[in-house]
Amino acid sequence: MYRTRIVVAESDRDFRVRLKEILRHAGYMVIGETQDGRSLLQIVFQTTPELVILEYRLPGSEGIDVAGIIEEHHVAPVVLTADLHQQNVAELVRSPGVYGVLPRPLQEEMVVPTIEMALASFERTMRLEKEIRGLRKALEERKLTERAKGLLMERKGMTERQAYKYLQKLSMNRCVPLARVAREVIMALEK
Image 1: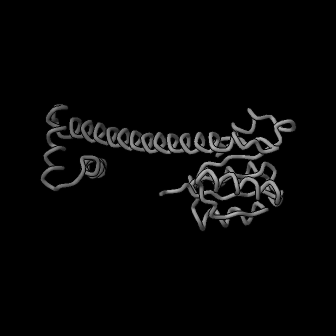
Image 2: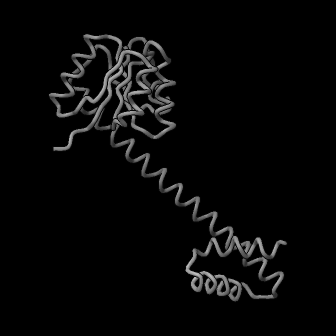
């Protein structure tokens, strides 16, 4: 059975032990634990967990900054643990990389839904970011093709259709992507 791999960063030993017990009982695998931010980043980048549970204002770092670093590298979603009487939940969940908040004191019935929601949201975010990268690449390739067509029309007296067919033929004959051919045509005609 596949189990979600989790790293726990919590300075309160009793809270950490109880949380690990709840996680194991729910079928999750705790692959690392720490009490400070610096060692958390080392553990995260060495073990690449699927989720990080991080104490807000973890000693040795600012909890939100650590979450931001983890987010920047697209390693895993972060779920913060925080005293909701002292912290603004809306502010916490808007922080970079934070996909959920577990309240202190720990409420066992909140652990699994919070983790599953964080995992699903992170997966959706990663999928959307991949789609955006693909769309940006397609747009850039389209711009190159349009620019190459324009130069062929201007410098070689071709119609738009002829210019496009010319680029397509070069691409097929050389077995290279249309965008690469367009880039080469642009470089050749702009000299």
